[in-house]
Amino acid sequence: TQRQWILFTDEQPVVLVHPSRDRNEGEYHGRFWSARSHVMHTLATTKSDMMRERAMRFVERVACPVCGGSGLRPRALAVTFAGMTIHELNHLSLTDLAGALAPYAGMEHPSAASATAASGEATDVAATIASDVVSRLRVLVELGLGYLSLGRATPTLSPGEMQRLRLATQLRSGLFGVVYVLDEPSAGLHPADAEPLLVVLDQLQAAGNSLFVVEHDMDIVRNADWVVDIGPGAGELGGCVLYSGPVAGLEGVRGSATSRHLFAPPPRVHPVPREPAEWLRLGPVDRHNLHGVSVEVPLSLLTAVTGVSGSGKSTLVTQVLAGTVAGHLGVRDDTGDDGVGGHVPAAGDVVAPAAGLDAISRMVRVDQRPIGRTPRSNLATYTGLFDTVRQQFAATPEAVRRGYTAGRFSFNVAEGRCPTCQGEGFVSVELLFLPSSYAPCPTCGGSRYDPETLEIRWNGVTIAEVLDLTVDQARELFVGLAGVERSLQTLQEVGLGYLRIGQPATELSGGEAQRVKLASELQRVQRGHTLYVLDEPTTGLHPADVALLIEQLHRLVDAGNTVVVVEHDMDVIASADGNRRHASVRARRAWPRGSGRHRRRRGRPPRCSRRATASPVSAP
Image (tube, rainbow, N blue to C red; front, side, top):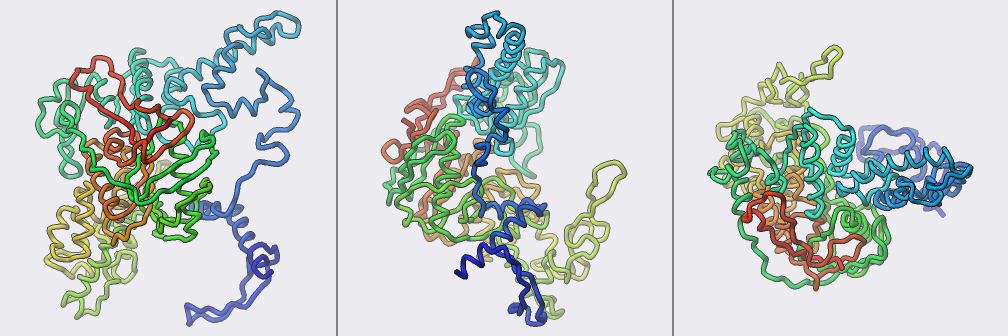
């Protein structure tokens, strides 16, 4: 059929093209590529990660029919150890692998303990190697990474997992007198897995090393010997050392948000019970750690999916649930390469049997990926408020007299931007034998615009001065301008009032980028029936920011939407609507029912152990 030919033909005929959009362009001859040929050519030749990611959406990965996915020849697979090939050992979890090698490492297995001609020296060598491997594996298991396998691809690991792998390497090195700097090592860890992390940190310290840890987890802070509190707020409201000393001394510091949450955390506010509008039933699912899992997700509620690290929560929600809903919707709400609004299944998504999908009309994945890939993307352009701002400048009497349009005030258009830096505000300085450095543009001084454009003022400010305002300052300037004021208000409500509206998107942290996406969703006209999928949105957030996040998630639910969040944070879990009656997730190594309590840390004052906790989603 014609459809099959268009999609899969290997022919590449030359055809006459009649441009329909650009009437000024003449006809020309072009070569036709089928959809399959185009995808395969893109994968083979492109150097762009974005293009490769788009092409991978149309490719299905299958195991090699010759080697079965092992990547090895039959001769290599003929050799076994502990009754398994190297491919089979490579795909065991680290916990299972340590258990399989332990009898050989301790010379407890009959074949390892015997001194026959068949074993002899070769067995001694194998036992020595097995002993070294087991000691390495035990460190990884203690750090809560026992669910990983040796064959797990590095790009699929989370930042928290990568950081703990590096910690294990350092612990084995035996170095002393080293300064270790760790950025939120507890990221992605279930509270039950945080205790082994503290043990490893103590071991590094006991070996004669110094540890500097940037952390929001109050249990890690309580375990520290010395704390440095920076604040009191964020952005221009921060940058001051409020306290530096033993942890106990922080209790008397006024104006410290950390002190309030460390010694007198505010009581958890449990939401008024909501009833689910409908149910989404998913499963059975077989993927990674999930074996025959069936899930019931209540719609029009906030559901928290909990479980220890590696139990399969992210796989279930971000790959299977999101992939199934995306496959059902079959359309793309394209809002850019930012992870928001995409309905086309991404690489790695899995489509599973499901019922109740008709109640969902839109899906949004809110993750911590950057909201833009270049410095030209910023808070103003992403939220759309910059369009209204440019129109206001173009409507001023002086701009009308000069014939300036809204495009004149865009730093992406040659009409009004600085010709030297092309509207970026900075220039690259090449340094011999050193990486390139960036400096403010010598022509515009970082303003991005040419002098003529900067002569236009609205309410006493230029367009460059508007971009340099913080969200809080801009809110005061744009009072009464409905579209802009609403965008700025939602940014304030998610705790981003300190950001400059012209701040490049590449400078935002993952948590800030995620909250910008939430703000963009909150300012939309809410029609309900939207599924929001979030994977550990509290990563990188202070407890004070977590409270703001919870409030915004409930706003989405109040508008008739469904929010499904994978989370370890007890405050988010306690505020969720879902409970055993509303949703059940059955996965291997899932969090036992009712085991949300925290272990008490060494030396923790009794008043600091008040961290309550029941999971709203049970894992029987």
